[in-house]
Image 1: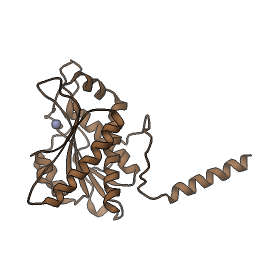
Image 2: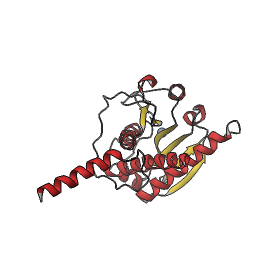
Image 3: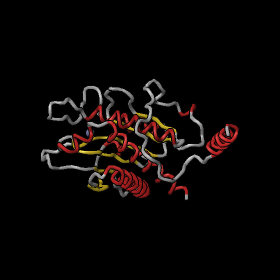
Image 4: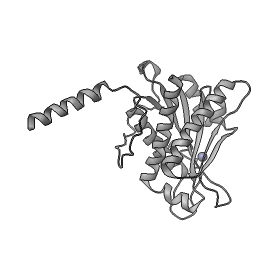
Length: 241
Ligand SMILES: [Zn+2]
């Protein structure tokens, strides 16, 4: 019996070792995936990267002196922290899928928008995803919005960005049940100034009590991150077909 089990284990190891990099089946959401610490290299030197897997830039919005949106419930919930936590989860999942990743920030640092875009352009990633959370004067506003930059100068980039946004939106809403508010044109610096397919995800409204309650749950942030990562994976897989 023991030998039998060992054989099965060996087989499992062998099969996993030979698995293709991108698998398009639906993955279950792990309840508690480990999160890599921020000590790992963030602004990767392109020369240190391999050539096989596409490089994805993950941009955690705001940081440092720029808190982004802030909750009014006295909980001290700040957008910049939610962005970074989500970004680190996205990075973890993307690495699991075999992608290379780079982050514009990996701690509580202020980095100007133009610098985020120019640095991203300089390392030539396959695509760029910026992570934010929303706020509105009307606290009833809720759900997920995704922005891309629509431009006649580069129609191919606009159309690929939109496709990427739609793939991410589909996966995020399916997983969380959150309301999808659409994949829209937005004249936002990081999606305008980058030159690869690029989207900016607004994962929910800090100003909406229901959304905020969700965003204060680590499991929910992981679901959002999983939606973003699988949306990216599906988009890349479709592009390769
Ligand atoms: Zn923001």
